[in-house]
Length: 148
Image (cartoon, rainbow, N blue to C red; front, side, top):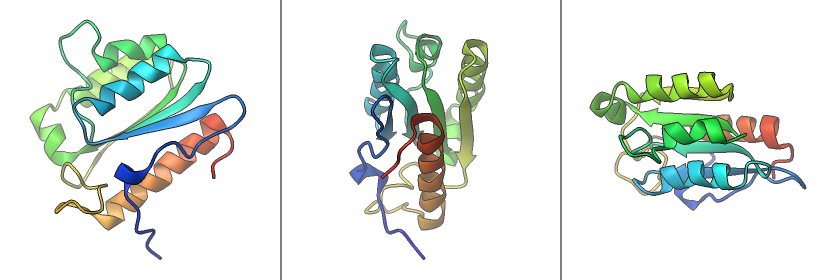
């Protein structure tokens, strides 16, 4: 039944001739990079997924939440419960930015700790990791097409 996977080992399984999906796991820097990539290549990036990402809402001019208006990608944002506790308004700010930009977004706080998708992390949560994986695959399939 279990997939025994790690998002930290994952890199772009959504691909079609026109659109790709990109994912990020657990990093102050990688989360913003997925947003920046979607802005840099709006016609190419069909979806992005962020798993227990950090620093997606901040007070800089290039804060990821401000970039949503400049992308064409759908967004899947999976937030760890302890990250949500540290910045409870981030999910609302991200959601509002997506609504204003008319970008499809699925955003959820998972009942797991920061790092839950990384298989070798002490806080790895297989049930929640598999849920995140399935949501990513569904998002990529819907907005990019082929998933392999």
